[in-house]
Image 1 (cartoon, one colour):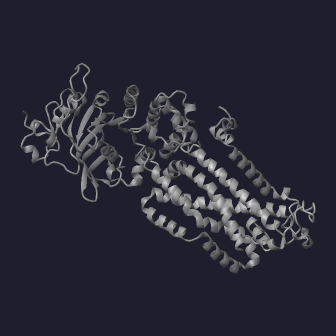
Image 2 (cartoon, one colour; image 1 turned 120 degrees about the horizontal axis):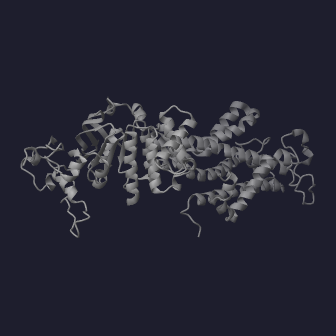
Image 3 (spheres, each protein chain N blue to C red; image 1 turned 180 degrees about the horizontal axis):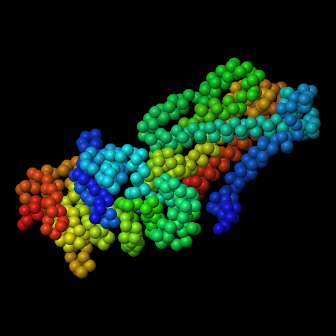
Length: 323
Length: 305
């Protein structure tokens, strides 16, 4: 399989006045052409920062301080602003959380779509419109000719997210980064949007990075899952293995915390404590203060990812030597 | 698809306008004033710019309804024998052109500077300090200063030709920080919104994001201050003319007419000052009232009880 995107030892720092915060630490991920990868983790684990760092749009004072992001054979983390602008929205596009906010309220859908096409392709107005209509058809917007002339407020939430997806499809990108694309939508629409994303990824052979905190969603859509904790990848493997056979105590906690339909009236499990603040990281393994099975070694060293027999990689000393 | 006119007829804009009698009255009066002043060459019974039609013997005639008035001059004549009614129409045209022109210049400068300083952080401090410096000079001080320099440079005779563009320039340059500040404040609020982030993710250039995405979202406050600023600019022009630094007497604006009449007010020729004064007040009043209505319309939070 050909690699589409490879992140090697990525570090993202936020240099504040008092202290430098390490939002993303030594993250290595790769995604093949047409593959779907899920990134899960709690709020503040660095999921969104990781997503934005791929397209080099981390808000200040954040900065990539180490590692490489290799996309299509080039290290795009070193690209200049102008060079990166050509890649953004063309080869890599991004879908955001809230479709109410990502469309400009004063411009028609048509204007916003045409603008994207024209920014990246040298086409006439007619051709650009044809591309827009084609993509609107792909996301099942009825009577797209009429819809092009309408403003965002004339659409429902689910429809708007579909339009946002259509905009991200316009230039036929190789990779889509979806940052919690269904969080702002109600449950029935969530399923609809996820099905649509899945279908589009398969028909267009696009890579997808799905950033979410919803394990159920990720397990349905993606082939591989990376679990992020305090800026580090703690477990990465095939979706099936992660869901059915989690290895890292944090992933185990996450899975146990999911409500079970069959379970009856049991209280939900929860992981004790909170994720450590980036200001006060514990020494050694960042998960140590909340871990039930930690060893003495855990407070001294940071565990690194090691591959297990079932193909998943885990950063935990308990799994390293085998129990 | 319904036609544009039909959509306009059914719009909330027209509905709320027609329900507000003050706005409708103001609009009708403003429309009459504007049509009257720009149609002056067709409507006015006399041409005040053509010295051959003016007879000095007609000077200081009272309005037609008083005992000494003649029906030839409806509102009387000024000290040079020009028909007051015609001169006022021509004068109002000059006042409106200067007011609108100065505001266009203010808006042009202010919007560009406001956008730049709101969107590009590096430029913010320097541009806003320039605006502060500009605001700490009084408009009249700058106008008197520049006006005096130009009058001596070009001589009083040539000054007449450049007076109108010069006034536009002076009033425009003096008041742009109003726009710059308003636009900057809106841009600061808009740039944080996700659609701007999305536009950056799409890969659009900075200029395009500023111009196409942020600017249209900041236009409603700009529209509101524009009406107030037009009224202010017309008043500034009148004040400068009253001080003798505005339009010359050969091409009088409303302000210069008021000054001209002021010398004769104690000799009983009240009409030379009062009529242009009333017209000026009326013009500014209706512009401000319309501005109030636009502000209420664009800000639904401010419903009148």
